[in-house]
Amino acid sequence: STNLIFSSLQGFSSLYQSQHAAVPAVDPEVERTLLYTLSVSDIRGINRKNVGELALPVGAYLFSRHGEKPAVPVTVVYSDTLEDAMQKLIGGKIHRVWVTDAQGHVEGVVTASDILTQFSLYNFSEQTSK
Image 1 (cartoon, rainbow, N blue to C red):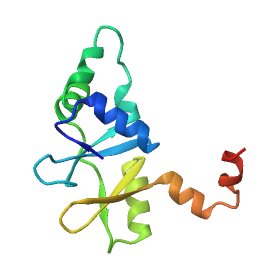
Image 2 (cartoon, one colour):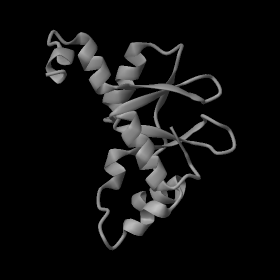
Image 3 (spheres, rainbow, N blue to C red):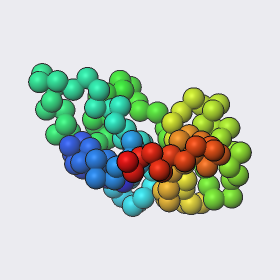
């Protein structure tokens, strides 16, 4: 995860180190409380003229990139079913659903790729290791 007050550059560094396509941007006051998502797609459009935006805190950066307000992340809790997660992914046309506890603290993430991999007859792990 990345803290909302960290620089965006730190956030993207955390993203790179996690080897995921997104990390949760969490509340600096209440650790692990999900507020937004920082995704690889959020770096789109950065060029020499606006590279300085990466020095902005993650929260300010997301607001500057998305206009008014970044989308609220979609979540499920442990008591939700896989079907619930799949419905949110498909119905929302989104890439990920964050798994939170009852207090809204991020515990994990479920992606469409995770689900497809579990139901696929194709062994993706053999192909990626070659």
